[in-house]
Length: 299
Image (cartoon, rainbow, N blue to C red; front, side, top):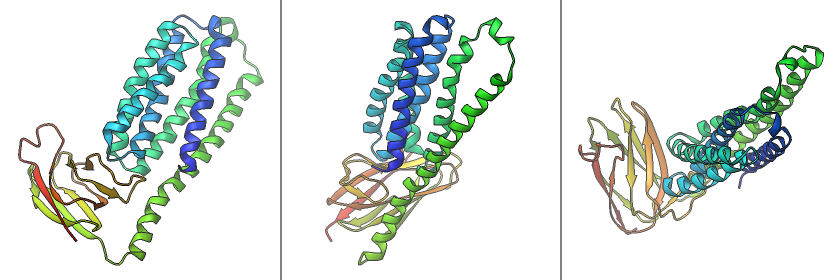
């Protein structure tokens, strides 16, 4: 596992630990509604980060990433709210459930580089929101006291948090490179160039509607979406080895998504012969005729 994923894990563990400590110390000083707000804020941001992380780690297997993100998001939500009471822990659990699911879906749909940017952004929001504990604890009398420390404390906190998150941003660049280097090494050492298969999505139809591949042959599948709405290609039942992720012998459906008037591609190697249907998973598009077939033959 890349060091950037360890960075995310350690950051979330430390944040949850700080939340538990602050909840225990400041619980009696917090207004009645503040606990609900804090629980929902931390549960949602943390679960979104978890969902995005597993969404990109398990790209092509949305079911597995969603199940993992749902469970971990709910656990994180409970931990974020348990220190403030039963009601806040329940609200945290439900917020974590929703955030985990949304994060996993988003991690599947966008590029790895964009996912890492969103993770850093959400980490920034989540960590900075720890200051809300102290904001909500301020009484009216405290709010009238303005001195040098009132300005310096937030400034020092901002500098420290910014430095830590800049480190994470730099680590995220390194996490994107290995997959690209892996593909480059494969092309440099392989005996054959990969076969490029370009499929156009136009007027709710695939062109061509079928293509042939060989077992063990590296395929670059390109989806060129010419329509004004998003389309995708999902191939179920095909056992493949993907070249753009850590998955090997992927048994889940192979998924390729393209936004409106855009192009996207995925690199894979079929492992079993047979005929496999592919189609667009956007509601209504399969019934409209967005169905095709990939035929895998022997070498």
